[in-house]
Length: 496
Ligand SMILES: Nc1ncnc2c1ncn2[C@@H]1O[C@H](COP(=O)(O)OP(=O)(O)OP(=O)(O)O)[C@@H](O)[C@H]1O
Ligand SMILES: [Mg+2]
Image (cartoon, rainbow, N blue to C red; front, side, top):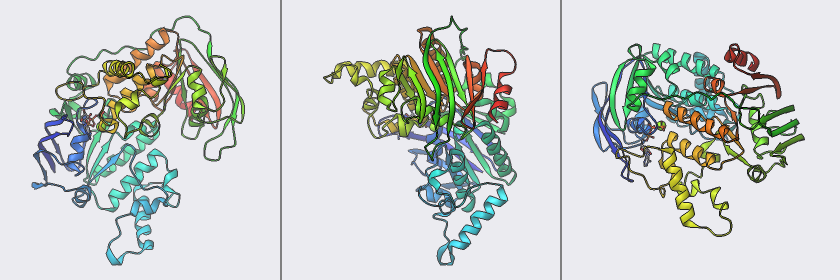
């Protein structure tokens, strides 16, 4: 059993991320760790695995007090973490990446090591392309590589930090089946997630963090959505659904006979014809490799089509993001750190990245400072225990996943774009932030803008969209309109 008691952590910027947090992780249990964005979940786990040093508090493993000097130390004690996007070495065959660092002294041979990786994959039923270059692995395969790494090192405590956010329904089911098997083997599992229903369906116990403190811990069966939301947010959650749609607006986006066939690294698109009208929220769904990623890239100007036309606000797109933005488009990419943000620049730099073009020639600092202030005000991100505004001069990567997501989303909303393209907008958002997102999208459509959402999160997508285009093998195979029938079932059927 692992216990964390009275853990405190204040970062150098003065944020007290943990204020006496505790957690008790038993053998053979799946333990959900819940809390709003910025509550301190990741920080608590990072102190357990030695990424961070706690300022105070104790960690015990099977009754003995431990203090890990680093991650390797934690791994030796059998404790490992799997992150949403595991940092694995690119440019090597996947089996090598699984085995790196697990070579046991002079008895090691590559052949023996590969055989061990293979036998773990066989034993656990993982279908990993072991000889394929690790850089081409999907998000879920990278997570499995991370799990294999931990199994190979004999770990028995597994921390999963928001891994399901980037997984499809099917991948999540498979992951949960794996968690069940790990648990049967006596492993302890800490599962951080913002998806309450699915988490409660697998968890044995739940611990809720709020502003760095552990405020409740109980059996998963004794809890429900409402009590958990009240604990996490400290108040009843107001959830607004998609507003009834107004009259039909004109078309803002017209896509005709679009084809992308010449890019070997991306799934093809064939003869895609679709349009988006002002005032509507439209979804695009499809399983991996169905072509949704390719469509997203061409529509936002990151890729040029081989044939067909795209018109945004009547302007023809030419494969440049600048043309897309100038025509009235805004875009939130799924890769927040890689594409939406420059993580090593300050928050200020990241937030003014488009706005500085608005006031033309001279860099008007006071205009930009006001701009940043208004964004920070709108996101209502809670910065720390004191809820004081944190400085926008801080480096972007010092903010939590959900905080960053809310900030870039607000930046794109502030463009007042005619067409707002969002990729996986729900990733990393807590329930309250998801509800705020719906309100914000409603107001975009109220002012005549349109929203196009690419997402595999069907539960969030279906109630929000007026229309959903389903892609399969690069073609639109179904358009789900209206509210009649079981839309979710129809969608899943059309996708596979
Ligand atoms: N390296 C850092 N330097 C400064 N502040 C940090 C750092 N890492 C996290 N914080 C701050 O500590 C607080 C807790 O962050 P943490 O990442 O633990 O939240 P979380 O519960 O995991 O949230 P989310 O659901 O958004 O991932 C946040 O206010 C965050 O901005
Ligand atoms: Mg986190």
